[in-house]
Image 1 (cartoon, rainbow over the protein chains, first blue to last red):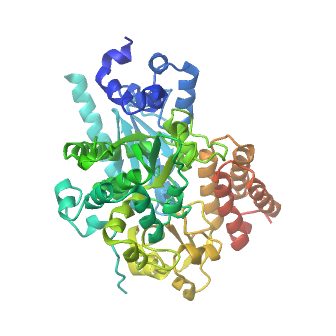
Image 2 (tube, rainbow over the protein chains, first blue to last red):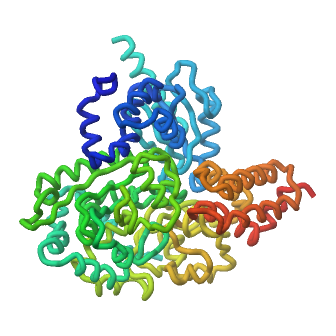
Image 3 (cartoon, rainbow over the protein chains, first blue to last red):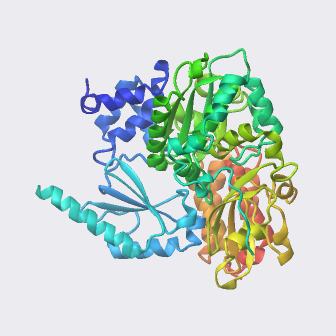
Length: 171
Length: 420
């Protein structure tokens, strides 16, 4: 039993039960979500463990991580602020929103704040075009939408998450 | 001007708490599924759906009943896969349906499953719809507890189980064979067709892939009959459609209208028109991949939005994701946005799409940086045309369409950006 199996034995069993037994490979994406739930990225070790569980090659697992944008090999911030600036959102001011947010956070798009908590990213359409500016927060094993946003609202959220994290650190 | 919406799909806007199982059942919920399983053969169900004139709401507009008829009855098992990848810029209808009216969607999926003899069906959701998938899983568990899903339903031999599967951020997975690849644990790259999924689909078995909105239409079609459904909309476009309205309008959002409603009804009657009284310059009817349709005069706004009318204009209705562009929008800027999107989302399998999207982006970036020449506009148009008819799936075509139509209709917008 590898580390992933020890940590998530119930979850893995539930995931595998979704697919016909001879089609275990279908579980690769759900297992990758599980593997990056903790640190926000998939470690080499976890990728190898998933390959073992599903009886696939580790390069095949890597090809999945590389192809899909929600999987991350490189470490980013604990939270990823992913702003959509595609056409419909841009028509509602998403580009200006992203630029101002970048200034207020003191980082360029693609960079991570000095405390390692937030990575700011521009992403493709998130199917919330009528409520732009909007972003999703990916982190802590979750993805959450924030819609009809102002930069002040994001900064308030950032402050909340910073305080929450420092409390966790103190406890 | 007040425009009345007709709620066949967005019924949560009329019926409070329809996302609760008991409330949904009080309003006739799951009676259609029960009627089908206990009193109709699968062929009967397919006949009703064919006769209703329902067409696929994901974009292609293919007749749903006919799609189901392609499933062979000598290869088993069969699967239904619901396409909730919803990734076209400008499209945001399926998410609202699944969040707010989940049981009607699930009942539709169950009816489709029965109609094609599937005992296991999947909902493939884009990865960003993580909370929606969790919500559907909870609803599915409730249905199992209520005896509406599981083995030997209503004492018959029919059994059915539903599962969700999350993508992870790839527009291409909305293309049905790429979606199947993804569901099988591979990178989402389209397959060569034929064979079509109806014969060799999920796990190499016959598979029907339907859009969420298409499936959500089914319970009321079975309850009220195909004639009722045909009485809505136009002759070739029956029923209602959720229009996702975005861009330069004061009240963007989802609006459910009879097919054949006019642009004016949607953009002005419901959307409040562009801000500050600006004029509508153009519309895109199928999200970022659609033709840029110029609005030359006020009368144009009376054009009915139906499959046949917009098809005749060379601007297919698609998923009815209407992006409004007002007189302040420069179409060269718009093309930079769409090229950026498709360059990122091309899966890389077919060279004309992968390279074409790359070079279109490079050219429009040069033009927008003020470093292009007039001949670069022609080159951009030429690269766009070279992609067409040379790829396994429509993505390359999609990338090409806004570029060519914007240049052809609004060349002046590009000329102002280049060196003289």
